[in-house]
Image 1 (spheres, rainbow, N blue to C red):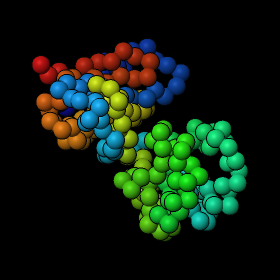
Image 2: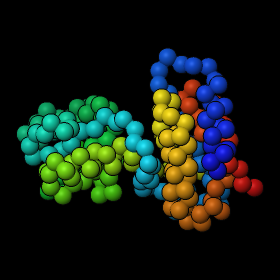
Image 3: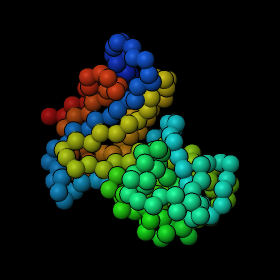
Image 4: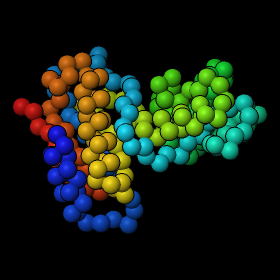
Length: 207
């Protein structure tokens, strides 16, 4: 798929330039797939990380990441405060012993919008600098996949990334997604990529 992906990125770069760094979105349209029974709720990981606004629920503050301690919980008195916190960050980390309290306080809002820290990407066993740095790096490469329709749409990069990094992220995401589909390639109708403000360009089509 490399060659088709390279062509697609080149085509998108020929589109009208915008005044902001557009997201690069991957769209995988599905077939032979039962959305009610087989919907995905998982992560795929790409080789090149994207800048994300991250925060962490830790017992003490660290210079490595914006920290929310248990003492800070009182700032989030109602649902509106928690929603505002969720909007402020792309994703959240947590130290494992705090997860019960995080779920109790924030889960009702964070759960439905996929912002809860996850064992796959977001939960560290202890507040160790090396572990925290490794998880931050992992979070930047993690793409949350949750579909409720016959299409999976995920952000795989930014326009400012190199063509090489974008192609590698797109191809890696497609491979990982395909592995997670119940019937693999037989579930993939077509694959498209787009920038935020462009029309999609076809990368792969299966009859």
